[in-house]
Image 1 (cartoon, helix red, strand yellow):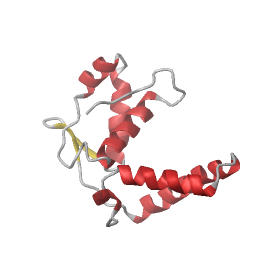
Image 2: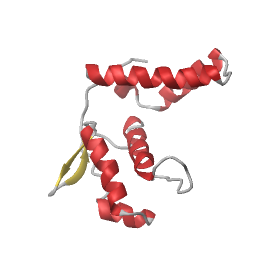
Image 3: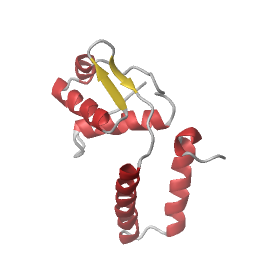
Image 4: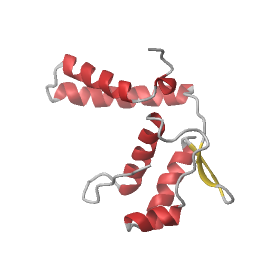
Length: 130
């Protein structure tokens, strides 16, 4: 798994790490049982504070995407989209779509982008069948 972070971005590094790992799970690069790099090793690879990586991993743990264990480290878990997640996801999607509309993106372009992005992820994660 290759993670890319933008050290000059306004997006906090822990959030970038979290987002790249979620994308790797959605793309099937990381599957249930896949180990993540140890916190200190990943921090050293990027030259960042290990607390930053720890914060990203803890956020993923709270969201049920990984489990942390002293013996096995961070491991990807299987997840199910429960009702609270669906409600939160819908609210975040609504805001992002509202921003696209407010900035003048045509609806067909928004839909094409959404379809393209969904197609890039494994269909087993979306619950849809092709």
